[in-house]
Image (cartoon, rainbow, N blue to C red; front, side, top):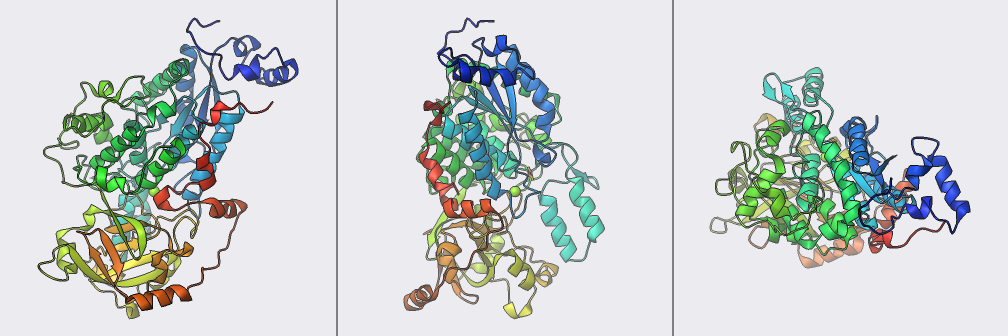
Length: 591
Ligand code: FES
Ligand code: MG
């Protein structure tokens, strides 16, 4: 079947139909006929659509995509394309040690090689668990073939004893109850497992729901894609429509570089504040922006996103879970409300082939308990502050740190309402924290800030979600559930802990955190957006001169390659050398 739609010669025809090189063409062609393709269709001038499969037995958060695949392929075929599914290196947040963060860049590299080296004209990016979404968009940005995100969607809502039990958040709550002696190991396990009742990714507004919302806000998925729970029939329909749409995008030659603009990233930052999104979004979006060649800076999170209100009442910032968010209208309802308030660049091109404005037409919140209006939000100023000082060049601060309780405990000097003083207690990574947190000699009190270092991209490696440390058990029993924490690692998107995180540069590469000692006084100045160790300059310089970088032990070859090439969290934690490769599709690989 020849297609009547006008288009340039498809890239895949360089493999499958090149009379100038019968030898290679026959080899490319013959093996694909062993399965479901005929020579006639492979040489029929129809686009080949890759489907990047991130689900597997070992990646349960994305396994829904295994079951959606029939629908994606049907959509592709009905629109005249030829589907070719291929596997992606798994990135399972809850399964990979030392951390799934190590594998985001590995999956990215693998995707770039597949998209560049195989006869693919465009790609469906299946996403779900935290890092699968950025990894897929980073790869698509590097290659710049037409690409569309298909989210897997959250699990159904979890329930425990008649109450909503959200992914991750139930872990933090149960850890406190265990520390207080109110539950035992058995109940701990049952509570946490109750939060995962079906296929899908985390049902809270953790990093997974956040990153899929980011893909939609960027314009990389069909309107309304991200919030549909994995087992719902709407998810099946979305899979089919996504398959149909990618074929059209290939004919239109609508590429990531047409969609991933500076304005699209500003939309994503604004949406992240409004949904109460994860602190993992900044490094992931930074990475996508860098691979797309878009100028974005960690400071943009404050300038563009800080004064945006929280409009989504979903755990961990609020009460509800994914099913309610979907029924209330999901990301389009949030964006429509933000657009009315003038906070969205409506002209941004999207995968629908239309600007964002048109996609949002007629969308609105169907339940203002779950998605509020812009005028009456859950909280004002819901974005991140970006701090600096002698401990780091940049770190993110969740504004929920600044609770009335926090103000009371750390206010140093009435009349200077933005200045807080505290004592530092420093841990060398999570093992040291677990060994010593209950050691009375540390003298941790209500005016202590807990620091953790050695947990950034190079140090861990991959950067660990360990900054959300809980106070000593004895303090929790007295009712102090949170102490502020600071670190060069990350924190789970489902955590509600007050924290200052993603400190860059990290301690092991000589960032200021390396020179801090337990007992030092530190000062947080919210007006100046600084956090400093109050150590005199001569002493600080002496500590620097004394410092030797810690010895680093690699356990696998990838860990070594990763550490040698990775940048800091503020810069997206990218493989630095990879950011130089832009629009890779322009050059065909050699035969
Ligand atoms: Fe996979 Fe949360 S652990 S989505
Ligand atoms: Mg996580």
